[in-house]
Length: 252
Length: 248
Image 1: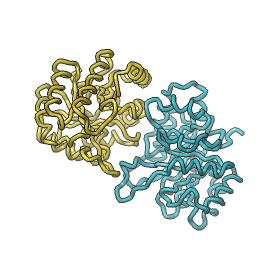
Image 2: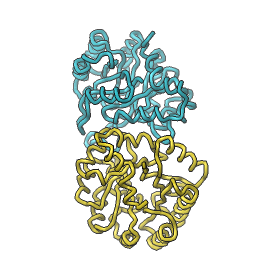
Image 3: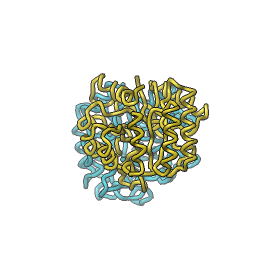
């Protein structure tokens, strides 16, 4: 399996587990590889400090991880950050936090970043909700990025693969009807009774990706969700691995 | 045996019940504690809504006696009716627990006669509980309300749903009340919930629950399955603890 949404780093509001726990969980549950990004970069003044640290943390395990860069397009020097992450660190995707980093997906500052993503064939992940809003730290509450905004973003940049992370039940359909061809979403926070049984016929199997949201979520939740879903094996394989590998060009 | 201590039905419709049990089977859930909050959820149910909800639960339990354990939905806004429902559903029926939601704080003195009757009948109470950064509903109980009622009636047995939402604090608030347990139902599958609860409550006061249909049997169960616990502790949390409380 391939986990498209793992993170490593600290979280300000509660202790979270790290690299060893992630690797152990992957080994125990048959997750061969994970796309991983810096959780520290959500809160650091300079997200690149998080990207730099991530490169060091996973250095001995590059066979298990596909690193993604967290970029803030409104910070001076983001292009140098992108170049270092992709050219030096071999990062193969980008992660955006418009809510935590305080910009809109319609911001003109995104245009050059998205042009670079298109040229380099980098998927761009947009984190919608990262935390349960009811459990946020009261002095520091951050709204989720609306699915409608992520859908519009995907339509504005049709040449870039857009992956919405953390959408809840009832939200993917808000990204547009029909959904943009380049729009994908992960399973991490998509939950109800029989969620994947309903999602596969509704959205098609090709745009759903296994995602754990580790370390904020336990690493078993989404693996078990996929394993116990009443869907056929071809769909399970696509969600669990095939779609991620296709997006990342693995095996191409 | 795995018992989901916190599940909801919206009606006694056979398609709905069969669908719930199909997914329960796939998740390995043997029994479900079910309550109804009415066919259309309202925060302040009428007496008629309480009766209809409880009748739906009784009918579901009649059809699947080996799978469903019924809860009686009560409200402090209708004390006489609630006492009648306790007699109808528990004394003369098969229900084994009480469900309280958001029509009153759980330490509301109007609930006293209902609590005293539950103690007489030796049935536990499942209380919806949250502390929300986004703001609670007008009569939505927090862990502090639960602790206050548990101290007023040390003989009552009450379990705090959703581990109070803010589980890091809720576990500390009620840890000194041995008549309070917590269920892990609802909310996102955050890492470390059960490990945190164990530090404060010990392993006998934590229950597995899902809060279906809004949540998933499987995802909510991983809160327990992903914890750093031995098999005996896992079995207690997944069913043995609540089975003892319910005498089933």
